[in-house]
Length: 468
Image 1 (cartoon, rainbow, N blue to C red):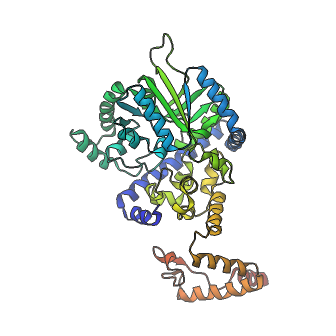
Image 2: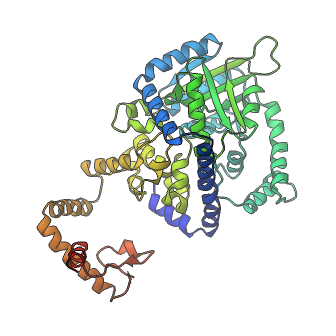
């Protein structure tokens, strides 16, 4: 995934760095304030997280049964449920649906699964025009189909001025810099697409088994335009998104929205069930669910199945010091941040994403804020172990780890080694507080100074203090 090269480029981009700094506080602070408000109202957010984790585990333990129940109830309400082994099959199914209904244009609300599958490219190859209608995704699409940098805020890496330049160039209109006016301009451009689209494509935050419904959580009205105006509505989502009941939905919504955007509730929560009925003023005449595996069954059967609890809130990346510094594009695929560092090697092959399990400090900020308690640092460590077992790490690294393990299990030798090491590092610092060049490991000091020890080990300092 060329993580190192991409990370270097992102660090050197002053614009990206400035935009990421602006976004950092918004996500982190809003989540903190939303949870504080919840606690002030008598809520127990930790108990809510525990309940969310238990719910997701319960569903995953009987995933096949809940999916079958969803299929029965969705079909009873007139929808068609289709199953796709991978992204390519999902694309074939959706293109077939479009051709069957004579679709020339498809409006889309945000869907990470469609990014996984490469759906837009498949539609274009079939002569069907896909139009992204989420404002962030629309901006990226008209900017040469740039990939998203964040799963909740796709254009978090761009400034208002950059978007103003893009709108002026693509829309052929005078350049605007007022956010309200820019939003109105995008709305006016998209309105004609909403009204002329033959098919709407959406993702799904959750699938409710007891009603055969899809739940969509958005802050823009485009989701409802996409799902109610065209004659055909297609939902593309992963098989892990199913939950048993509407009561379970209310639990997960309280977790998802506070963790994602720091709101008690989003602007739009849509629960879509079946097709347009007699007397209904809007709604699709045909509704399809394309439920995609794309590696999820393998993940379910593995030691990494905790990752399937993920409800795609983005809290892990919002709080990750690595993501906050380099943004999403460095991660090389659909999912950035800690979640991407786990999912990408598992879905795309460990050998194709060697750096990602190491693109984390293991500080556990991601684990602490995850609304469904996914132990992300543990999963990252396990991926690192798998890489060593499969001999995917450099020989020098594997030998160094073996040497470290051998020394660390011999206390006397370890004590002697650390006594020598702290004195050497203190000498290297010239008596100062930091080391400018660490000869044995130059990468540690390539972009920063290394804190120097005082010249004594912890044990020595503790013993001296105890004597005094």
